[in-house]
Length: 494
Image 1 (tube, rainbow, N blue to C red):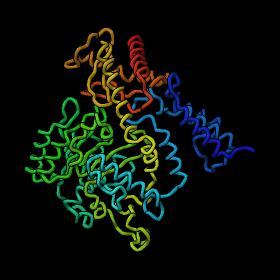
Image 2 (image 1 turned 180 degrees about the vertical axis):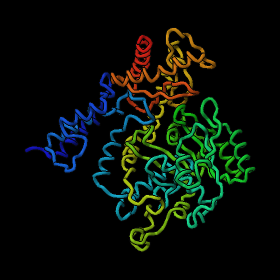
Image 3 (image 1 turned 90 degrees about the horizontal axis):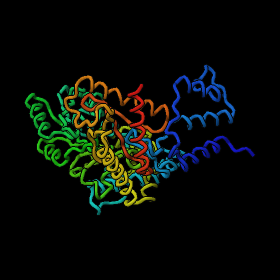
């Protein structure tokens, strides 16, 4: 008997999860858009004609094989390109099960088990972050936050809450034209500006404050910016502290930010999408000191913790504000007189239908425990430290920045060694170094041996290695750096 198509696809997916690419396996088998269209044309074309015909199972399986073969293998230990990698197999299958059960997290009626799971996980996250003490209810009817579709959406919700706290009438009357201002470091995430645009306060309301050489906000500059805003007759209403910047993984001093926010009656939101997971590690949680004093805190568990995309928690110190800010009490869905209505979470958010993101996290946490989560963080930090040691020991590389699990450096051509500083480079040398990183990465992608990121710091392209995957070994680090050096030498000879 021939297995149904869905079973045959599931077998391929499970085989991939159980035995992901590693070692000398390619991180990607790069193909151009034109090549991909041609490859799929031999199985199932990517496009759709005016009339979409059904295809044979074997043809679709051939297309599935192409999907797997030509996708980027983010589970590969030599994928250090972005701040997610190495999905936890339990998270993957938990995502499948949640999708198979196909419900929404809006009401207890539709998702009784998942509603309680969300309450339990948010309560635990809140206790880890210091929003609640260990005596707090493990399954509260009003948990300290909610799950969101990504960190940018969570920041939007947090800023809506911040405005609602000082101007609750805006929800009903609309903006009065009052000039509100919010503050974030110039190394912070662009979600601040996108949120300001969507909230109608305008991107000009976002004051980008100077950061230091490592990427952390300069608190004296923040205080000066707030005073300038007040002097201009504006209303400073929110500060966004960054706990783990995208490029250098810098952590703002959250305690000082909390002091400033309290002094001016401002909302403190912490963008811990990346660095928030330091809280799981007893040796690294000091980086997050002060987060317990914030008003809201966004935490992407799909970054360092290996949850599948997406798994974002927005913690709120005063969760009662969620209802007054968002609830409309639609009587066809949120009837107060139905069974267990007090557990319904859907009216405390902008979304209605909401996918189940909690199951994968609940499964993984129950399997690994606090100690397993801590070990994942500590391993990532150890791999970053090993990379720094290798970079420091060789004149092939020059470290530029980076902390926690990020290492940022340049590869130095033989003709420039030893290069002791990037300050005051002659224009022609700056241009030579700037052009090398994209050429090295392009060759790396073409050969599929690894995948690393690069981005400009101070106008100079630099490599950034981000360690997220618990499968990374010291041997992988050596291969990554060796490939960068190998392709750099080749680029110099081209």
